[in-house]
Image 1: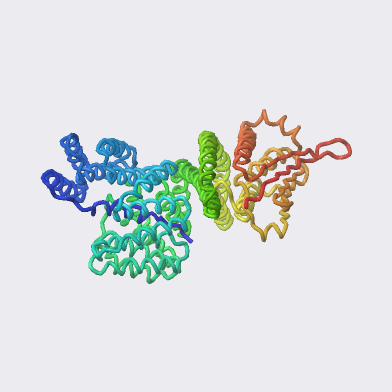
Image 2: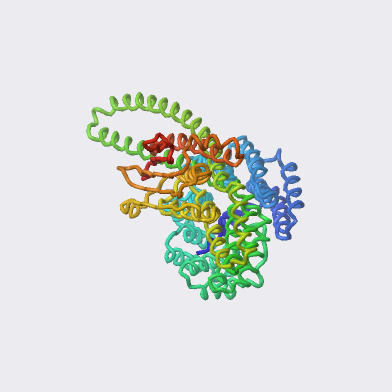
Length: 635
């Protein structure tokens, strides 16, 4: 199944921010005209002129009373700066200035709206922890303000952030809350947007299709609005997941009116629909048409410079070229995608660490709620104990706050330290697995087959190599990986190395059936460097019939991996190291794994251990090496 971008509707909130009502007083009328002119400039993609217009308006009215329209000018300027620069730093600076005005004016609604926007753009910048902090601030202030529109914006923003972090169930709950706020007749488009967001947060394809159709129920009079077109695109995505490609194609050409759809700086609808067409034609085996649409999509996605979207379209286009037999372009696209892989890896690491922080905060909140409920029940049971319990509660609260404050700052420091260390070691591990020497030698082997006109072997080797590269890139998606996926990567790697060395060694896999059925999660990118050590170090210069044996077995809540070779042993291999510069990479990779295992153990999922044993015969001669890797099974 080809992967495609699901970020179509992430800008729905940004689109609908333009619909907030404006109160037309004397100052409001003038600013209202500025907003209309700014909207016209945005529609014509004249972003520089729009930014100048709104900057002048901010300078002109900065000493005047803070009105709803003036707040909208700040927000609109922030949105345009993101459209223009493709990052949210300037937008965040603008909103920080607006926050100061809101505080000075003691305007709660202004402050709530600013916090919601800051939460939105911080998540756009992958700063999820601060993003959730600002949404929590807005939630606290909203308790004292009766404003359904601000509630709608807050719930949708929080739902989008949780969806980005992978908490789809919680995201759906917030999108449902947003839907409940839109019961007025003049909020049909917002009801449609809420249903689109619910559809996007659904994993189940039938549920996603159901809510996409619900969104379209409110589009009878607004079929050409961007929100309704996005709902149509979500519907097409649901049919693609159901493998009903003809129906998905019909929706794009008939309901979306693809021929008249144009690129917009406000959202990625146009390029996403192009990508959907490429996916559909790939499955219909019309590869020429698929490549045409995917290349158009890539050109438009490059304008946005979003790492997640670019990786998705690179993968789709690479697969289409591979299926069409154009391996040269497929490899070229994979190489190009490596340039933005570091950025994507950092984004995914930020998400992983943010998910751990969110989980910790939710656990603390649940524990505090449960604790308070128990105390309240005790207070209700005896009225005479109310005063005494109040004193006790006050003392306990001071203690809890003191402990929590100390723990919070310690954990904050630990979080940033782990974030920095884990980012460095994961990037090193990925660079180790995809090192230039291995790729160069692999491509040299492929070139040799092609020159010898061994087309079948070249095709099989190319398929194995491209599959290995894709699987390694996919495994960088998370700190952990399923056992079967890890075994697939290891098998592909050994097969490629065996081919590279002219099948000069054999290998044996022994896997515990119970372990295979369990298919547990284990730390990713740990085992491969030790196999590489065995092949490069252990078998180098060996005159025996070389054999590599891998064994996997379960012991309690741990997985034991044995890597055994009958090579020259560590002592002889270390003597050869000074003679070969390439082997320095292997020792660096092993050192990096030791560092990463130490960091992973700090996350509280158990300690990983590695022991290496020299195999010696009766004549005290080295006859190989045995490595034992003990990894925790992640629940």
